[in-house]
Picture: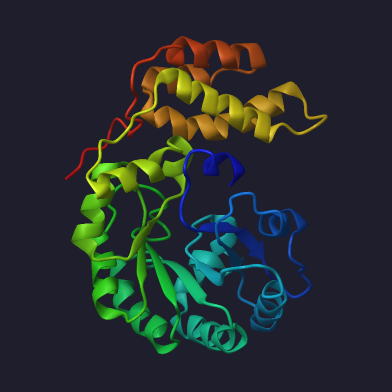
Length: 306
C-alpha cells in the first residue's frame, strides 16, 4: 500500500484477507495495514471463512478499527482455500452464502461489501448467485469475471459484470484482467459499473491508477521510462527485505513481483529473471532491460483491446 500510494494509487484499498475460523484472531500484520495506513485513503477489511459465529465475531471486532467497510471474500481461487469451502469454494453452496450474508448484514454497521467470482466451475451459476446478493442489501459487489476453477486463465466474462450492474441496486466494481487505461475506460463504458478493482495489474504498473484517471479526463497518459520502472523495482526490493533472510529467498520473493512486471517487458526478460538466484544477477538482468529512458506502456504484450 505504501509503495503503490507513491505512484498515485486507488481511491480505496482492500486489506489482505483475515483468515477467520473458530479460534482465529485478526492477524496483526494485516491489522497494521489498517492502524498504520500510510496512504491517507480509506481501507476495507476483508474476511475469508465459512464459520458464521467466527465471521460475526471478527466483523464486530474489526469495526472498532478505522475501516471504511467490511468485505466478505467469495472469490479466492486457491485450492487450499476453496477445498475448505472458503473463498471461491462457497460459490458451490448458495444457501450457505445466504446464511452468512444474513448474519454479517445484521452484525455490520459500516458498509458491508462482497467480492465474488461468477461461479465455481461454470458461468451459468451466476444467475443463481445474483438473487442471493440482492436479498441482503449489501453496499457494494465486486465481480471478478472468471470462475474459480478458471483461476487467471483467459476468457473473462465482462458481460456478466454488466448483468450484475444492471440487476443489482448496489454499486458494482469490475475486477479481472484490467491492464491499461484505454481498456479500463472501455470497460467502464461497456459494463456500466461504478468503478474498477485492480490487483495484479497494479503490481505490474503502479502508474495505472493515475493513467486511468488521465484517460477519463481526456488528458495525455504519461508512460514511465525504463529507469523509472527500475526505480520502482528497487523500491519494492527495499520494502520487501526481511532481516536475516537468506539471499536466495529474498531473490525468490522478488520474482513473485517480477513475474507480473515482466509481462509488460517481454518474454526474454521473464526467461532471464526467472533463472537468477543471486542478488547481483537479479539486478544485472533488470538493468540490462530497463537502464534506458524509453517510455514503457507496461501492458501485457499478449493483450489487445477488443
